[in-house]
Amino acid sequence: MTYCNGNGSNLPDLASIVLGTLDFLRTGVVMISIRGQLLWANRAAEDVLNTHDGLEVDADGFLLFSEGASRFPIESMSTGTAVACADGYGEPSIKYVHRPSGKRDLMVISRRTAYFGDSRDTHKPFALVFIQDPDRAVRVSQRELRQLYGLTLTEGSMANLLMEGSTLDECCRRLAIRPSTARMHLRNLLDKTATRGQGELVCLLFRNHGLMNASPVPERSIRSSVGPQKVFKIFHEARIYRWL
Amino acid sequence: MALTQSRANVVFRSSFRVSSTGDGVRGTSSGSDGRAYVSERLGPPGQNCADILRVGLEFLNLLSVALTICDSSSQLLHANQIARHILHSGDGLRVDSFSRLRTSKPSSPVLSEVIRELAGAKPAASDATHVVIAVPRPSGKRPLIVSVLSPAFVADRADTLIPVVPIIFWEHEEHCGIKRRCRPGTWDFTPAECRFANLLMEGLSLADCCQQLGICRSTGAFHLKNLFRKTGARRQIELLSILFRGIGVRSVAHSGLRGAVVGPSQRVESNVEDLPAVRSFFAKAYSS
Image (cartoon, rainbow over all chains, first blue to last red; front, side, top):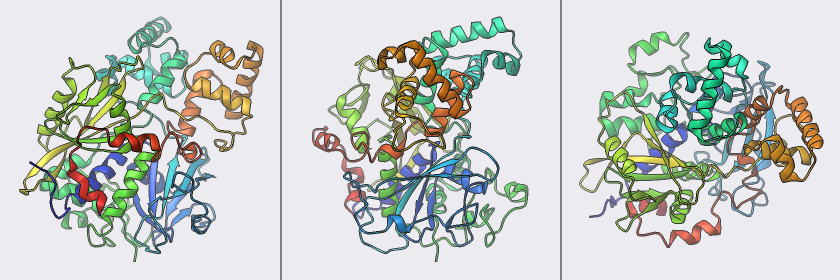
């Protein structure tokens, strides 16, 4: 029994699964065309673009810097193959994008894709853009913390507060608990995660969960209204932007 | 495309219709969360699908995220390069001789149970978008955190829909820290401060960091003070929080500079052949 579909029509399925996986990530990822137009953005990137704070997309789909409304530089990346790294990917270029709102600068890393070749096709993804928002809170869902480490609700809230950089005193205030209670919770936290101190605990949490988005995925409810396959495809294809 | 028409609450500028508060549109489209949906400029579906797919996989490679796709009986249908590398090492997850995804400790049926349960879940089920499992690793490293995502549906040869479950995991220990060449943010760390910050981000205490670097405690404290000053942090925990959020858990900026971490490294490529027959479920997707 083989699953392969003969005419290769599993391709959209795999694409939508891969794009769906990228939606779970906390790092914003954007695909842009050779003209600098947005082709696809994951959930985290859309969140950044929709705030018009630092980076945004104009009416024609071009990626812009909010300040000065200058277009995202593509030219520097499109000068032949000389920029390609030894691993086949383009040399990453890093920019720190100032944000009008006064939040910390966005870290924007762009690099050519390994597959573009010499084509001038404006519908093909040309460059990958990663967007890291330093002010985006990293939260781990209570459910996840309970499933993995058996944390109680208070311990879970405390773990999240510590990840924000709060002290024990701040935890007490935010959770409305006494210092002795907070110390007990912290001891239990360290016990359950097998870590030796607050620093190690925070590192563990960031490493284990810092890559994933804790927010629930809304597509499920959309999917259920029409029928599984159809809606799943529509959902993702609807977000592959095409600009004429 | 009627579905997308009703969700034209696009948040991008001008030529798209922008919903003023979002409430009006959200009310009519049940379950929508008011995110951007583009309806008007949507091209023919699937035309640039193969390219988008390739680049999507490239993103995952650059981020060192392992993606495997299994059917309800844990049969491995697809594994990306990062996943193949981890599976081949057999440290936590492995593939058995029937090309099923298994945990390295055979006594643990949790993974296959979760996969079966998620794959059998009705699409309408609203809770449990994904399940996270900690898989113990024989090498003694910290457990592998494996996220089993909600199922997608693909058509098999008979054109019946089968649920498949995407599973993602990554090497937690593998974290390329700050590199001098790509100074993070507006902070201007010295090389010594970079090394110190990288050790802190591995979870070491001040004393351990000093010991590792072979510096005395006062020098360590001096570095720490400078790190505080440059990042605006007041405490060690806050510093860690700022560093992790600013750099990200995966600093993709450095992957090109140290190709060993991500990308199609030779180490990974050579291992692909050794895997027990991974089903050629998506073989077409690659060849086209």
